[in-house]
Amino acid sequence: MAVGDTINVTYTGTFDNGTVFDSNAGKSPLTFTVGGGQMIPGFDAAVRGMKVNEQKNVTLTPDQAYGAYNPALVRIVPTSQLPANQTYYPGEPLGFRSSVDGSEHIVYVVNVTDAGVAIDANSPLAGQNLTFAIKIDSIQKASSASTATVTP
Image 1 (cartoon, rainbow, N blue to C red):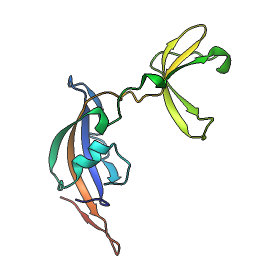
Image 2: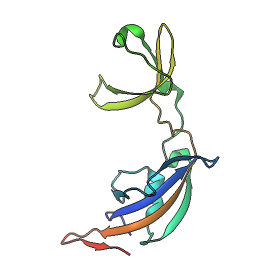
Image 3: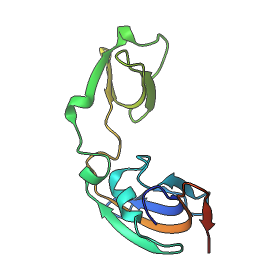
Image 4: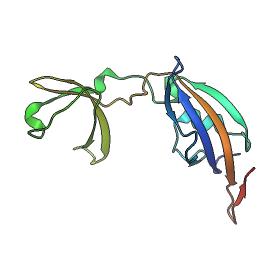
């Protein structure tokens, strides 16, 4: 397979200690265009050159995945800036819209005090080595005139 091909993959992602953090095994395959910027860089690079039914295990360092953990992305939001009568819990994901560019982001509650809520905008996977077991289910070759699907 090459850049521009659309592929279906089955994967399981684990941390260094073997704990599974994500998997689509037994579910619908993940579909993406190789080199299309839809996947973390290391995963996208790992599938290049693979063939239908090929399996591979790859371990990605943080720079190949979700980046290093950035303490500057932890902020305290004063209680006065939060909706009244709302209860927050550590680990809870919250959606917010950036006042700078209007983009939407997910942050996670770290701590709750009377003064405010500490939120973390880092990905929960930031700073982690991630191992993926990847299997290529199908490849749809990129073509300017037509596309052909290669399946087992």
